Length: 218
Image (cartoon, rainbow, N blue to C red; front, side, top):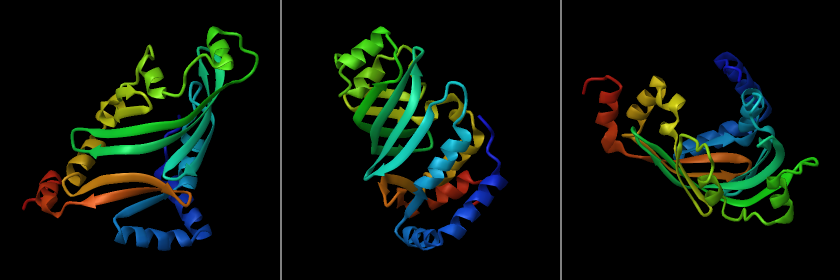
């Protein structure tokens, strides 16, 4: 996976804003309401540029399905190519200095076997014998569970992003959380008008703690 170049990202952002000046007005309105709106076009760009690799999903498509996000991609499972489509809803968000918990609900999951695979899994999927209506239960039986996975049951998956070794080992992430979480929380994550909106919650009484975390004497 290529390493992001901040200068290239800044150029792309500048070009996008010149082509979509309405984003500036939307951003100002959002700031007044403690809402940060990220164009899904920006997510598509990041996926296209940085989600590469031999084992990475291919042909990723992101679409707003308010209040959720529709995702489709091609993956390989036990050497068999699958087209995966689902809608993701963020129903629980708890961002703290020591944990970043994200509760997701998965809906409309579809698994389509590509090609003429004749593996047992392909047979189960084609026949409909494999119940995919409760994707959390399928995830819980994965032989190699992702490090960030806390719980998977029925149609829900709970992640703690700080349990991912790369995220947990990043000192910039830890410092950012120590500074921001006393004064800002995340109360909702929703799509609207082809944007992913992050709804924030302000906690002014945590201002002193934030300054101490930033190394500023108060």
